[in-house]
Image (cartoon, rainbow, N blue to C red; front, side, top):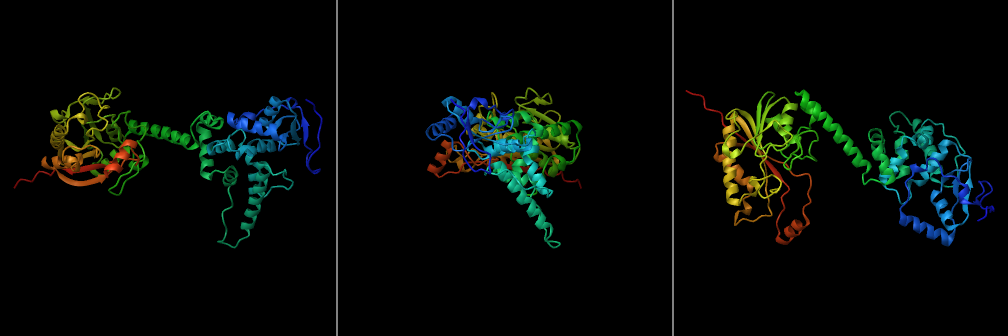
Length: 480
């Protein structure tokens, strides 16, 4: 292997030369750019072996590789000279080449690109030309040669001129100058929102963002931000549960229509349980059907979501369950068929029940769960539950029951009269009056592939809707 130089290219540019690749040192910040996959590496290696190098690698004045580490490795493996171009670069220019020249290469995902341009260790240098342009200080003489770094300066300069032109528009005609964030995002091929999310993610979860860049994690910028928000939400919920009497709007979104949609469970409310529901659903129930200080009873409390929301919003709550959650000492053991939770008969302003749904998750609720009962016994159980709920609520109070139907199960001719129908009829038979029914669809519209094929074949609908039945107990008639 020799080090004989071979002059190529324009005399106005640095002259490319062939050198022994071992004489070029890796850049100390090479780790900021993720390595390509093994398959991609082999494709590039085969191309170099057949066609030599198509473009020179970029080396700084210290003899360090700025762009071209993969080509250096390939040259060493093949035992051939490496085509390089030496340039005197400022630290800022080095980072622009190191990061920007790799942004649009095929092995980087959108999240990797966003993470790279917002990495705190390089973002100042990468965004420098854009900030200068925004201040009208961009200078001529940007690096040439068509690289992403050069394009970055060109884009930045263009943005600066655009901002100056807009400043001369008549009053009322001015347009917002392109933000630094938007200019960088455009160059990286991502949205400005993704850049903002990536910056926020770096502040709260730097280790996760480094894993995103290296490709060591399946997480995206969006998923990292989602985790951060959930953790913040959980901390906020814990404080609210501890302190109590928190204003509704500080924790929840008020629903003003009779269709309540929820994207996900609310972190921080309740313990993990197969029957958990969104805390926002309970909160809206409390808003419309109770007032601060009222007693709320949940005889099928599951993970304790109802109790946590009640504490946060200043309501008293008594909870029970057939199988009390091991981490909740505030949930007593009680079988609802045996009657109202002790001490609650005729005292609750609101009774909320989210019973196990027939044949749904029947293997997750524990021994004796009602969901595994035969259809005839299930209907009888619903009738008994309705009676107990009616006995628990005070005159003028409300009973709210969340129901979901399993439309994939046939039982004689009853498939057209699902569980929700029978619960509504049982509540009415127990002497309660329907106040309103609210649709609470599940946050997804997919389904098990086998169920989907069955539904298409049999021309049947799959159930993704839950119905919140709200009944009121009539007030006692005044004597005389």
